Image (cartoon, rainbow, N blue to C red; front, side, top):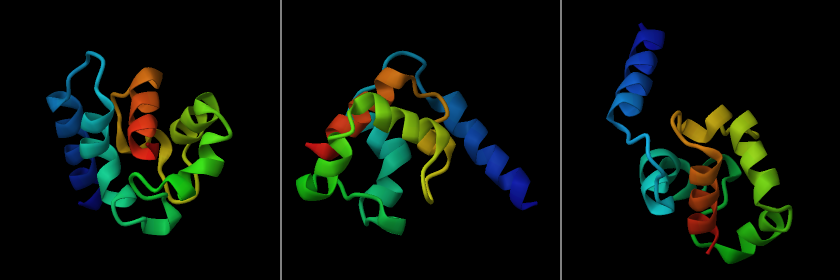
Length: 97
């Protein structure tokens, strides 16, 4: 039952999402906010420049790779099943600045 509910939630997000390029704030609101608003499991909080600085020092391509494969408690894709690399870059930039 739990798997069915999870699948239904992911499917509804995927169907409802726009396949065109997404703005960073929009991606954040739909896929990143839950963890990054409160810093769940060590996620750097939104607009916390100090927490984001060492991560941004790795470069956007490295951060996108981490999102795509998952990192620590963050699942692969960071809960954005329809995000392109460009969408993820925009979301990271939005959160970090």
